[in-house]
Length: 396
Ligand code: C5P
Image (cartoon, rainbow, N blue to C red; front, side, top):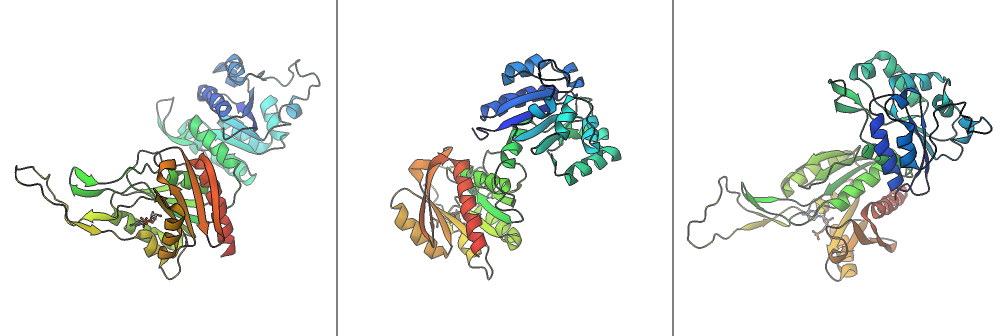
């Protein structure tokens, strides 16, 4: 319910991606938003207003002169309570209209008369998107403070492949949620490690752990929502990369360590969430190890570098944040770890309460003491952690 209490006016313009707007309405409502749909006349040739009416539970307007609007002030009334006006799909023609400030139908009039942020998700053939006129219009929209979502790259309804397709409804919803988050980290850069590492024994076997990467990925998403440029160094996980985040995929602790050292230089904050394997096999067999009937081979281990401690020991370290996942004595172990690694903030959690799941319970330990964060979805906790990081960055 990340859009609870938000009122969204969704404008649908004429393009084949209009069918995806129906799914978009469903997803927005699932996140707790109320949705008022307005369509251009040409959009109704692709999907009927009845579809949107059934999904939104509200009358769908298409006509400026609709007799149901008693005062004939549709352009004012429909968007009065809106927290955002979203146009998806936004056709090339509609973008041109908005760029020029034209208001010759209900939706374009709504846009011109709005008193809320406008987000548009373009959808068109790749050549229409590439056309200098469209690019000029897109640049004008950006200058006017209008947020352009996408477009995406891929197969198009016309059979061509390229840039111009509407980003997926799930991505639009994620962008809208991000839009409403406070921009606490604008201009900041954050490097994050997440997930497990995999320490190879041979080409098919290795030592790893059950970290899912969910907490690290949630922090990456929350930091990006807050306006930071985020680089995520990720061990092997089955999660999609959060939108707008640069992901570097690694496998072993040594690879993770190298990636971190390569990127840490221009970051303000380093958040080490990865469950890095403490040890790796001294040797990795190039060939699959065969069982030959004799006694099993012992695997000799060697200590991995402590990535977080290494970064914290740099001459000019970024703000370093560590995680302490413990199964007991959380307070004692977390504080001990914070001092041992010489980091200003450590996030403690009991493994029983968060490992693998979508929710967690955290305690932040820093120089000001302890800050318990009660049980909540990981993305909620990640946003609270990002707020704490923003405060600490301000103090630096
Ligand atoms: O020492 P311990 O593994 O308990 O510390 C956990 C914290 O240190 C986490 O933030 C983890 O990401 C980080 N860490 C690391 N490199 C290691 C081991 C842990 O960055 N080799």
